[in-house]
Figure (cartoon, rainbow, N blue to C red):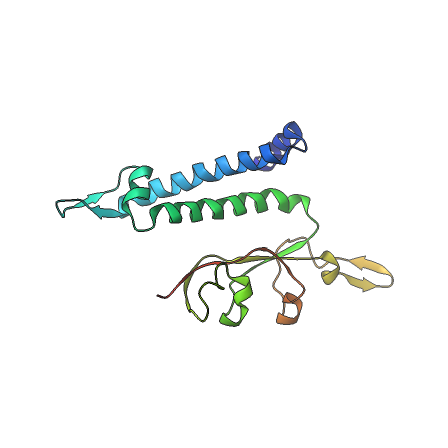
Length: 175
């Protein structure tokens, strides 16, 4: 149903990518707020008197947690990329891989240039890599058959070098 709504939205908006991006960003902001609202019962802050208080609103979460605004923006960007990919997948002939990079694949990790040599503590989101369908074609008697109906694949390291990076992995580094 969501794909039908997206196609309808795209048809109504036409080639006005600014409106489409604004629509996706609004949806991502709403999802990020809903996620933080669910998590807020687990997050507490210490008020001026030193007492722990449960966070009850998104504004409180953003202003009273360490790097709250930056983390909210990060969560929102993850949702933007996820929504965009979700809507593009049915319209694409390409194949995709969700990949958690190794330390030697720093070019696939967002902000790894700012943290040279730093070790990844955990990933917020994997890298999304795109592959041309020709990589998975099989030729038999002049007939082309594709690898399969699924859009997500697992590839070798050699094949990964041919990938186009749709989205770099988002990681937290050890301090």
